Amino acid sequence: MIAFIFPGQGAQTIGMGRDFYDKYPEAREVFEQADDRLGFSLTSLIFEGDEAELLKTENTQPALLTVSTAIARCLQKSIKPGCTAGLSIGEYAAHVLAGTISFADAVTVVHKRGRFMQEAVPLGVGGMAAILGLSDSDVEEVCASVSDKGIVEPANFNCPGQIVISGENGAVLAACEAAKQKGAKRAIPLSVSAPFHCSMMKGAGERLRDVLSGIEFGDFTIPLFTNVTAEKIKSRDDIAGLLVTQVASPVRFEQSIRNMIASGVDTFIEVGPGKALAGFVKKIDDTVKVFSVYDINSMEEVLNGGI
Image 1 (cartoon, rainbow, N blue to C red):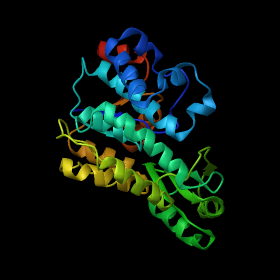
Image 2 (image 1 turned 45 degrees about the vertical axis):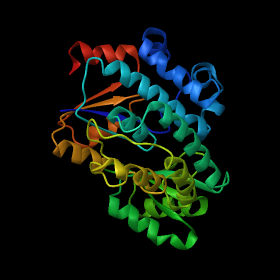
Image 3 (image 1 turned 90 degrees about the horizontal axis):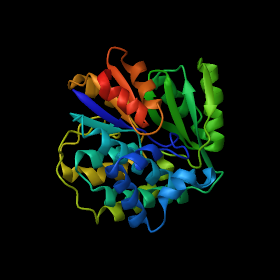
């Protein structure tokens, strides 16, 4: 079985998706729909905008959704995935693929989601760091050991030995030092504008709940494994609650991939900018096939016998 997986923030670059826009009408339609729903030219920002403007969370999130969806529409003409998942904001592209939310609704929601997340914590108050070389339980213990310094929590369980923590800056720095003392190979502060996927984001989640209450979700055309539980979502009635919870909860990507493999997936295609997820999957299980489709050349390699 083939699974499409979609990247999260950090994968964005100026110019991403331009070759698909230029060549494929179904990709161009996605970009045009985003511009129409948002009321400004997201397309211009993605292709020739200022990098600092693209890095703003309220722009990054719809930009990644748009590019990933555009590429998926092109890839779907030849490959039919059996299930899907996405890392953080990538989960919305997975929902579009799975037929549970229209792209037009999704791009509107994630634009607001990005703004809510940025506004939840003032700039300079929170941050994130990647901890390399420790187990999940070790990182959880490290965070607990410096709780007197402030909020710091595991935020992304990406793959064995790579876990991202999130919280108040002082507590994150203290956790980095504690992690090194515990034997971490490295503890790397990340260049992010907010402490994503920790309890400091709960206010953003509640604001998102109001937006999602106005969205009509459809039934799943293929299974989707959610960040919150790493399991298949059982019903469309569960979608809104899980997307609200996801904002302030850790992303269980490693376990999601393991559960997808257990369900029969033997080939993963990362759809969207970058190759980060492919790297994670290889570290999780090096027996499965992994591809990244981020431009037309990489798509043609997959279609011309790569799988």
